[in-house]
Amino acid sequence: MTYQPSADRYAKMQYRQCGNSGLFLPRISLGLWHNFGSVDDFGIATDMVKYAFDQGVTHFDLANNYGPVPGSAESNFGRILKENFSGYRDEMIISSKAGHLMWPGPYGDGSSRKNLMASIDQSLKRTGLEYFDIFYSHRYDGITPVEETMQALVDIVKQGKALYVGISKYPPAQAKQAYEILKSAGVPCLISQYCYNMFNRAVEDETLALAASYGSGFISFSPLAQGLLTDKYLKGIPEHSRAARSTGFLQLDQVTDEKVYKASRLNEMASRRGQTLAEMALAWILRDERMTSVIVGASSVEQLSVNLRTLNNLDFTAEELSEIDEILRT
Image (cartoon, rainbow, N blue to C red; front, top):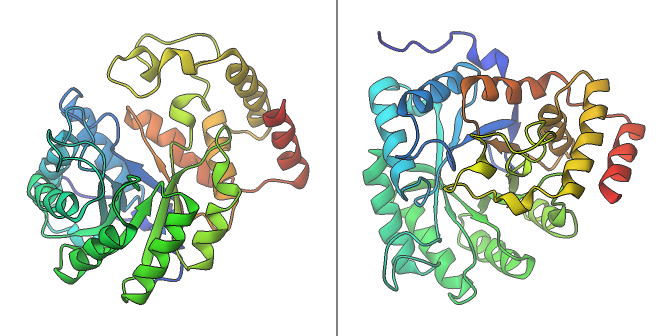
């Protein structure tokens, strides 16, 4: 049966202006880092994209190396688009990135012009797209001059292969340099993507304010700390969880007693708010006016549904925020 998106999908989602641009993003975006690769169930992946779109999620976050195997998330997403979303491309924001190891040899990794130009062509081919809405430099590699990487991003936009560009995980000094170069080239940095969650608040020191000062939007990845900020690990390691999978990025030794204790206390607080721990953790990120969106991953429609319920309660009292800070300091 042909997929027909929900007619009231846009009424279900909240959108926020991305930095100083005219582009609006959903407060919650769907990430394809996990659960969309060749080792995963394609039917479940398809159902999650359909459900997300039905709920007003218009932004889908990819990278060339997402899988496993690397590249397979883009290929699967391209197939999902072709089979279900013909005619809806203009209602979607599709992003991808390059900068991490993708193929063997000296040109399959890093932030060089060679790597970015080859990568975006490969990514467009895998997805079947004519352009990406957003294309990121996935990281500062510590070697390539920032000027070289940013000029590649500028040229990617001028060649019509992306509408906007962003940076991910850049240290503050290199981020400032990137913002300056892109601004002077007339292709300002649309968005900055960093890890941000209750257990990792490093961007609060400098990065968030720096991005805002240059008019860049901000989007968080790993907002639930790979599942640690959910109730999943409060009573041990579930059999099919990320920590139990050899292909996952969350390893068993990261599920520490300290983090489980903090998550347990946060879970009690979330219950008082009428939320799951995951909902409260996502809402906590979105409390910051500078935060455009959060990228959530999901392994099922049910899990995605819980994450999207976050939008029902984004408000915190000063006392609640103080209590969260106290728990995280212990």
